Image (cartoon, rainbow, N blue to C red; front, side, top):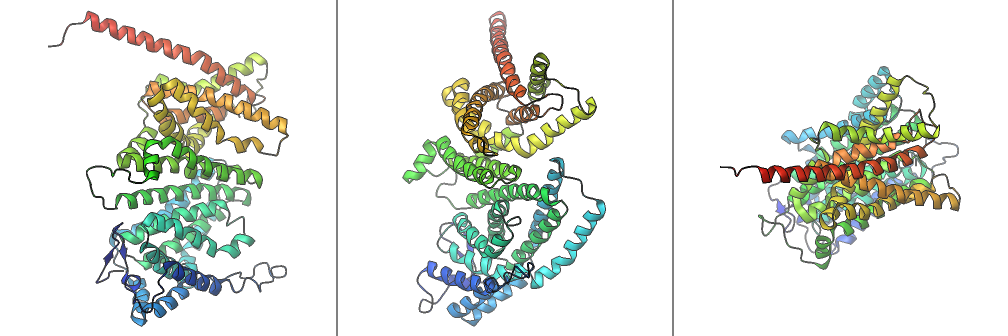
Length: 562
């Protein structure tokens, strides 16, 4: 909404709507917490009242809530606190349509829905029929106007973005405000969380966190437009439903997981944009840490990253293992939220935008030479096939050789690298191992990286609830494989000038080598990894020494350039 008197938050340059910023002292409760608690009681109560009286046993489709409480609560509170003028101004914010290019942000939910569906198909989900796609698109277009009028977005956004967010921004910056708003928004859906856990599970919750950051950023950049927030919310609901409904029930968790990972990425970008938009005393340089916590983060970025990443990773993967849920969505959440998100946040704090750009550029650095590229892609499956041939565990393929090769390349380059391992290795190879190698050398850096790299995978050792002996063996093998793999990753980083993409391809090739159709078993890929390391590391070091001696000889025999 365009206001005549915009107030700038002193710490974060946040624009606050006057419907919230200038409350008469005699009528406003002194505590912001008190205002928010009163709002939540009204918002939840006005929406949840059908929940306790619904008879789900005889009416499983009964309405559990009426999602209009937040907007009604916001109007009532603003009317009580500020009077009729402020309440009218809050409602008039829904008529602010002159947003220019910011209407293009409505394409983001569509892009995420299409990308999630496409990635799910690449990951093995069945391709939907064209008639189903056309039908889902038509249903989304028809239901969008209906959602705008009678659906949840209009009944919620006057509350979440019209009252709660500005109230939080009076006391906090946009990042903290978003972190506080997200759980309030999630808790509002509690009746559906209890009765529809397949739709409102962990992937949905992670997606809500990402959406909250995106919507806060858009809110600030559009001077508090609630109309855009309502339409954005409605587009999210329709596109997500359309994308998920295209797939069978068994594949919907995968679609949700991919969408959640994409929303977390979008939220992270929004958080970085909001952080970089804050004023600084010395714009030409990064501010010096002033608190003990800030100084600790600046001095020990790897330790801070590991604390954050392991906490999130263990929580996400442990939940999937304990509840016996499909692992793919939770692996994506651990990769994007726990690993990549933690690496980018710590890098942004320690090194600023330049550090984030450098980290992300390493993820797409591929000018490494065809020989090294072929080794990253083919060395580990070749080692696996060699072990299978020697041990007599090679079997005839159940498909043509061409189909087997295409399947391997798709699983490695598309599903493995682009969907999972590129983002995982941006954290491990690009952030952790590179920093440790700079301090301790590539060999010790690889060994130190192997420990937390193995540790984050510990919950996977408990899949299917094996015996204590099996768990002990799995953990021992995990740490041995981690050390060998990180040694190869360190060598590849040195040979490629820090190409995270090359390490990600090698990581994906190792995963794909364990599921080759011409090998009877999975242990051959582990032995093959050791074989490649035993042959490759000495060969690479000998080649490097010969190169150094050759350059030294040319230098001594050459002439001084003029």
